Figure 1 (cartoon, helix red, strand yellow):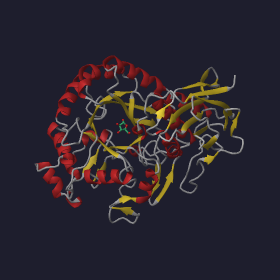
Figure 2 (cartoon, protein in one colour):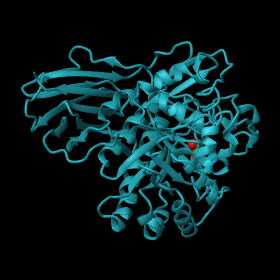
Figure 3 (spheres, helix red, strand yellow):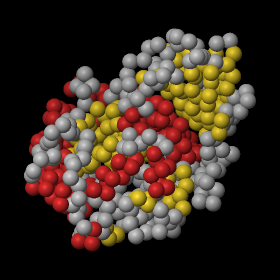
Length: 499
Ligand code: AHR
């Protein structure tokens, strides 16, 4: 049976929250320092110390939200270390990530400045593990209080008259692990206490995000929902993909087809996680008021040879692009519950959008997926039916194809597709049902490469880059769209109504 896709263009109900396409930047390795912050005296072109090339590249993705300062770093971060004249800020040791000295030059003001440059909403993760309730309460007051108050006055003294908007606040990170090794019952009570003092000042309404589960820890979700769901807007989930195990995760670029297969299979586990955590949430919150916030996800490989093991610097290949595309299609499919996701991490750490080497920068295959998939941001998810061949290896198999469809405000239908099988191309017959004006106006791009481990380097930055469909790869015939997808590829297709 041929691969078949039926898209119901008139049956969309749920909106794809743009925040599903969110990002995460931690004080880890070269993410903040070098990746974003190059200093006001640095030779790399910058605006107020934040490098221009990275900001310009990320702006092309329409980054909706940026999570900061961690990660594990968040539960060791004391925000008052990062305000005031930089030369007066204390240095600390980043004990989680490489035991390097952190000079606190990038702090609250620099973070809000970065968000404004990116056009991204700020999402701050507060310190529960080693911080106090007062410290968290004062941070929110510092950022968002408009009138006279000790914290608002301190903000003014540090050069910022107007409060910022702080729409998203996380109450601790991985509180089951690096954020304090708590039991869910204990954290649920701590969450209730800390969040009480995360105030809504003026018209700044804070969407409060509780620390959620790791991977398949459904018990954590159960306890948090039972004990604290009425106090939260969102509950997080973390899931990382690697080929091996935590000790030997696998190389980012040196792998064979067996590792390709197992990686994509493991990345697809996110569907089961979203469904099962969502199922627990449904029992306490059938209206789906509480968002599932996947605020850390992505691939995690062994660090690049010769780099600091604590810096989590990894290359990014066509395989990472497939993981990104498959995962984003799953998040779209569950956009009734998944309200935000933040890939880890933006620059130079884990599954990054961009890598830097001093003044040089490259765009990764994952960057291109986020650029191709951005058409879904804010669109209406369209229900679809996909019948796909299997991509089989030995006794095991995964679907060869994955698809997501949405309709934007202008009536355009966008399809994003992943083809997991690196051994052959795939033909897909697409039918668009219920479109007021079925369209033959098709535009699309494909990301593919000659090898499954193809990646961009500082010397060859376009080895993996999207190209337009070639003649014959997207054909409109008899009211159906026939697509030919190369082996191991992702694609975006837009069908525009005829004028
Ligand atoms: O993203 C790297 C680390 O992974 C984060 O600091 C932590 O939250 C997670 O374990």
